[in-house]
Amino acid sequence: MTAHDPVIGLSIRSGSPLHAEWMYTWKQLFRMLGIPFSLITDGRIPPVVIRYGEPEISIPEDRFVIRIPETVSGVPFIRNVPKAALRVIRTEEAESSPPFCDALYYAPPPPSGAVWMQDSGGLGCAVTVSERDARCAIDIPATAFYFFSLANERRITERDAYGRFRRTDSPLGSAIYDTPVVDRLVALLRALIRHGCRRQGVPPPPFGSWPGGRAFALALSHDVDRFHSWTWSKIRRAMKSSPGFRTAKTVLKSLVRPDNRSGNFRFIRRIEKRYGGTSTYFIAGIARSPRDPDYDPDDPRIRKNLGLFSGIGLHGSVSGASRPGLTAGEKKRVESVTGRKILGIRSHYLAYDHEKTFRHNLEAGFLYDSTLGFYRAPGWRCGTGLPFRVWDCTTRAELAFWELPQILMGTSLYYEKYCNLTAKAAWPLVFAMLQETARNRACMTINWHNNNLHPGDATGYTALYEKILDWTKRQNGWIASTDEIVQYFIGKDQEPGH
Image 1 (cartoon, rainbow, N blue to C red):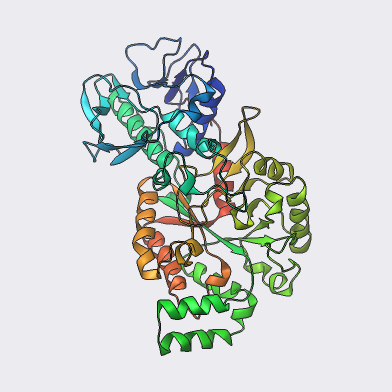
Image 2 (tube, one colour):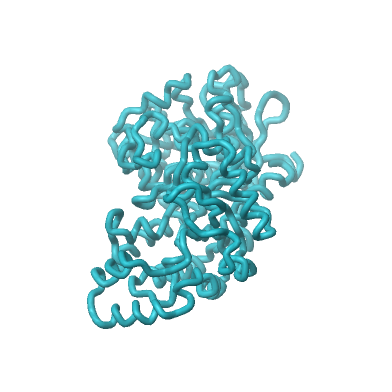
């Protein structure tokens, strides 16, 4: 065994009708782990083997085997998950395995052994370990693929007036998006692999870390819908949430500041620089309807501040999400004005058609999308905050196109018709999400509109944004733009052995 040989082998049933789906999913999971693996066909078998289902190849008895069940055998499985399927799995030994996990696909409890994780639903042991193997009752690839492929929202036709999937329409209930199901499963795999390496007396693989040894990542982004900070409705909300002379004075002082009408770009850069962070600004290209931002990307307020933008993405039109060719023209417009290559896109209103949007964006030459989140509430729509390659359900193929899911949007917390939370009331929710991200060594993408970050912070949401950055820095998190996060993942993917 050489220094460059993978420590981990994957054994998978080649005759499975879902072989393409499972190989795609395992690739994403190993990318998220940040380690290479070898697919076992014949020849040398690494010291630790993940055995998925009942593959044809036998594994020598001196290897440590992580056994994971293959519980489904055909594409219709995405339509056959009962509403009560999502169960929380809690650990018996928090110091040696993740504190909890989630499962959609579940096999009968494994044979007895040292209990690592217990099914809180009373169905027995979820993970047991012995001298030579670990037995997991959770079908990790099937659960992860359910999220990667947006299977949950494909099961229904209900959409809102803008064609968006609403988490309240989820066939499995909206709680399925309250936790990063996939990130927790990656943490479980990491713990199982480390345990197997200890049993085999070999060093564990160098699991992917963030630059500079950072523990997790916070991706910063700003959708530029407008330049001016205040509207009459926002003034009314500010006065309602904190009535009194002081709030009125703050609003009035802010109204006469130049920043109020110029996008707050310099103010935002000062905040982010204070914490060593960078961000991506998603700028609109062409207004195609009254719903789209109505400014021109050649506006002087953008041109004179280009040096402040670490990353620039396209804030795509609502119709561009469903009609071919539109985002390509919008991308070209922003690139011609800014002189910068546009890598990412986020659709206005978070408009997304799960059959069309990714194809249009791939054809337009984008590297990644960051639309997949919810506008009414935060949540893990894809089960993860980490970047992953998009799966085409029609061609059953992995695409050279990435998704970096949006996890939290400031306006979803603040607006009266959404969560309607004061900044003080929002912090416990945000704090719990940050803790979850740090615990899983994952990434959390936040979208704070530029017009909600300004010196006249009558609502407290500018201070909340700073509090997020401050906590991340103190907990050794990497604060970066969405462009940087995706490019870092692509760079890791191209390293030898991956």
